[in-house]
Image 1 (cartoon, rainbow, N blue to C red):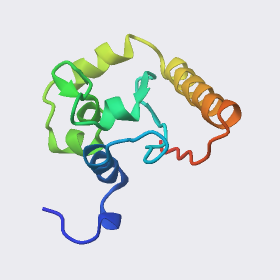
Image 2: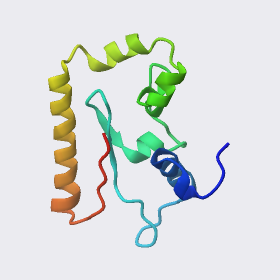
Image 3: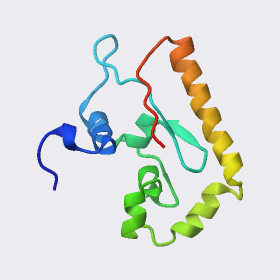
Length: 124
């Protein structure tokens, strides 16, 4: 169990709390649009990734579990190597990197250039 300020929690945990506690209300309370670009080159909205109401999953595991180094280190996903093969669809790293870069560029263009919004944070 974690104690202390929410600020001391990892960003991933803070984002999950955000989607659990805040009910967006037009023109009053909004969650900044976010995109999660996954290690296999696919992407989804932060709401799909973090929301407990409708968590996205593949092969019986949530995206966040499949993408978590902590889950890998703990051995939470026993057949991870097989799942990773399927997720990659035999694509080389260069192709996956290009897919990830294209997703970020598209999202940036939409949010910053088209909608004139700010506040993008990228973490790889």
